[in-house]
View 1 (cartoon, helix red, strand yellow):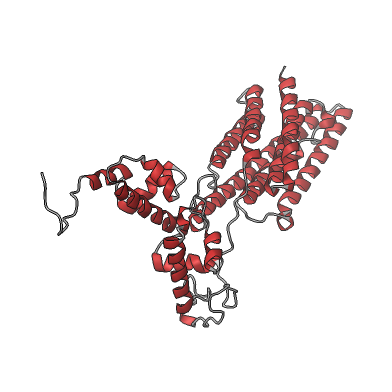
View 2 (cartoon, one colour; view 1 turned 180 degrees about the horizontal axis):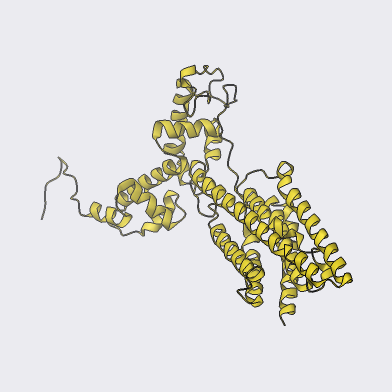
Length: 388
């Protein structure tokens, strides 16, 4: 019965890997996920065949690739290049694993033919060493994944006015599922502390989770806003930019080429885009879109917002949306319009972002702010008299 479950896991992995690999033509990152699933399927097949010594290692060697493939997938989702320059992270462990398993296979075959059971078992014990090495390598890459996701999420507010669906929070769940699956695998293969059915269920759960979430994800790319030199084209802003003084070299934006003329133009065009064209009401407005509309680079616009407004792009745009909601509440004047409808009209696309942004800007919740407004008296006009 257990052999059938293991074989079913292998077939399920192969079935899920095919569409993921096909989607590589549209989303490069899914190719890495497809290879990750193939590696899991190969390990399931190894569990099915390893009772026969001649099959040892044939399907086992991808065990060392799980960590690098998962890391490559996360890099692809977060817009970080991961290509041939990083291929050594796959080729070196794969090559070493193949050599070790080939040696084990030949040595066990020789021991079996000679009838030397002690030698056979000594060679088989090397399988535990491989498992420990694979676990250590996987743990290193899980730490790298966690750091990459943390860095990515810190950068998101600099580029997007809406971060939900881009923050990749589902990968947190995937991260801990893999951590738990690795623990079950270690307890089963090395310590023999858990039954085999728990390993099979763990593998099936990982595959099901990938099938449910992996195919629906899209890659999140952010503009390159690394420090640029003064000859960068700014499309409409003054092309002749001053040289940076040596004493300013240590400042964050010392090489960006921002000068007072460029700063003035950015301020004017930004004011026009937001106050007249009301671009903040676009629910999915990005830094790149706004920079293109203004006629500057994302780097210079980000610098202007950070230095002059003291805000990142997310805070700036959602602050304007909060101001618009406040204006709409005043215009509503007790009509009792739904606050969420007003938020959507101002450009917010989620209740959680609206509530968090409103409280960050005002110190109170939207409902508390509206209640405070409704309790205020009407302003006294010189051409009116009090009645009642």
